[in-house]
Image (cartoon, rainbow, N blue to C red; front, side, top):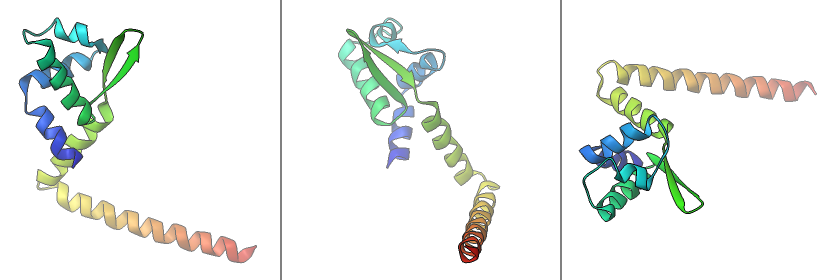
Length: 118
Protein backbone atom coordinates (compact mmCIF):
# COMPACT_ATOMS: atom_id res chain seq x y z
CA UNK A 1 0.00 0.00 0.00
CA UNK A 2 1.51 3.31 -1.11
CA UNK A 3 0.05 5.25 1.83
CA UNK A 4 1.89 2.99 4.28
CA UNK A 5 5.14 3.51 2.39
CA UNK A 6 4.64 7.25 2.49
CA UNK A 7 4.09 7.32 6.24
CA UNK A 8 7.09 5.02 6.74
CA UNK A 9 9.13 7.47 4.68
CA UNK A 10 7.88 10.41 6.74
CA UNK A 11 8.82 8.70 10.01
CA UNK A 12 12.48 9.68 9.65
CA UNK A 13 13.70 13.19 10.54
CA UNK A 14 16.43 12.87 7.88
CA UNK A 15 13.88 12.07 5.18
CA UNK A 16 11.59 14.90 6.31
CA UNK A 17 14.56 17.29 6.05
CA UNK A 18 15.35 15.98 2.56
CA UNK A 19 11.74 16.68 1.55
CA UNK A 20 12.00 20.19 3.03
CA UNK A 21 15.14 20.89 0.99
CA UNK A 22 13.51 19.52 -2.15
CA UNK A 23 10.41 21.64 -1.59
CA UNK A 24 12.42 24.67 -2.71
CA UNK A 25 14.37 23.21 -5.64
CA UNK A 26 15.66 20.01 -7.18
CA UNK A 27 19.07 18.92 -5.89
CA UNK A 28 21.70 16.39 -6.87
CA UNK A 29 22.53 13.57 -4.48
CA UNK A 30 25.83 15.34 -3.75
CA UNK A 31 24.08 18.61 -2.92
CA UNK A 32 21.76 16.77 -0.56
CA UNK A 33 24.70 14.90 1.02
CA UNK A 34 26.44 18.22 1.79
CA UNK A 35 23.56 19.12 4.10
CA UNK A 36 23.86 16.00 6.29
CA UNK A 37 26.48 14.39 8.48
CA UNK A 38 25.68 10.82 7.40
CA UNK A 39 27.41 8.36 5.11
CA UNK A 40 26.65 8.42 1.39
CA UNK A 41 25.33 4.82 1.47
CA UNK A 42 22.96 5.81 4.29
CA UNK A 43 21.79 8.87 2.35
CA UNK A 44 21.33 6.70 -0.72
CA UNK A 45 19.03 4.40 1.28
CA UNK A 46 16.99 7.38 2.47
CA UNK A 47 16.63 8.67 -1.10
CA UNK A 48 15.68 5.21 -2.38
CA UNK A 49 13.01 4.89 0.30
CA UNK A 50 11.59 8.32 -0.56
CA UNK A 51 11.58 7.44 -4.25
CA UNK A 52 9.99 4.04 -3.60
CA UNK A 53 7.24 5.81 -1.64
CA UNK A 54 6.62 8.11 -4.61
CA UNK A 55 7.60 11.26 -2.69
CA UNK A 56 10.63 12.11 -4.79
CA UNK A 57 11.61 11.47 -8.38
CA UNK A 58 15.09 11.16 -9.78
CA UNK A 59 16.41 12.08 -13.18
CA UNK A 60 19.88 11.34 -14.47
CA UNK A 61 21.41 14.37 -16.17
CA UNK A 62 24.90 13.63 -17.38
CA UNK A 63 26.85 12.12 -14.51
CA UNK A 64 24.54 13.51 -11.82
CA UNK A 65 21.21 12.30 -10.46
CA UNK A 66 18.82 15.14 -9.69
CA UNK A 67 16.08 14.62 -7.11
CA UNK A 68 12.77 16.52 -7.04
CA UNK A 69 9.77 16.52 -4.72
CA UNK A 70 6.59 14.87 -6.10
CA UNK A 71 4.18 17.31 -4.48
CA UNK A 72 0.92 15.69 -5.61
CA UNK A 73 1.67 12.35 -3.94
CA UNK A 74 2.51 13.98 -0.63
CA UNK A 75 -0.44 16.37 -0.70
CA UNK A 76 -2.96 13.71 -1.75
CA UNK A 77 -1.76 11.26 0.89
CA UNK A 78 -1.86 13.80 3.69
CA UNK A 79 -5.23 15.11 2.54
CA UNK A 80 -6.66 11.58 2.46
CA UNK A 81 -5.26 10.90 5.92
CA UNK A 82 -6.74 14.08 7.37
CA UNK A 83 -10.13 13.25 5.84
CA UNK A 84 -10.05 9.82 7.49
CA UNK A 85 -9.13 11.03 10.97
CA UNK A 86 -11.02 14.32 10.97
CA UNK A 87 -14.52 13.90 12.44
CA UNK A 88 -15.93 16.14 9.71
CA UNK A 89 -13.99 14.38 6.95
CA UNK A 90 -15.89 11.07 6.85
CA UNK A 91 -19.38 12.54 6.32
CA UNK A 92 -18.06 14.92 3.68
CA UNK A 93 -16.27 12.10 1.91
CA UNK A 94 -19.45 10.02 1.96
CA UNK A 95 -21.45 12.98 0.66
CA UNK A 96 -18.91 13.50 -2.12
CA UNK A 97 -19.21 9.85 -3.18
CA UNK A 98 -23.02 10.13 -3.24
CA UNK A 99 -22.91 13.30 -5.32
CA UNK A 100 -20.38 11.76 -7.72
CA UNK A 101 -22.56 8.66 -8.15
CA UNK A 102 -25.62 10.85 -8.88
CA UNK A 103 -23.66 12.90 -11.40
CA UNK A 104 -22.43 9.74 -13.10
CA UNK A 105 -26.01 8.40 -13.38
CA UNK A 106 -27.24 11.72 -14.79
CA UNK A 107 -24.37 11.78 -17.30
CA UNK A 108 -25.22 8.22 -18.38
CA UNK A 109 -28.90 9.14 -18.81
CA UNK A 110 -27.96 12.21 -20.84
CA UNK A 111 -25.64 10.17 -23.03
CA UNK A 112 -28.34 7.52 -23.58
CA UNK A 113 -30.88 10.19 -24.54
CA UNK A 114 -28.37 11.74 -26.92
CA UNK A 115 -27.80 8.39 -28.64
CA UNK A 116 -31.54 7.76 -28.98
CA UNK A 117 -32.06 11.02 -30.88
CA UNK A 118 -29.56 10.21 -33.61
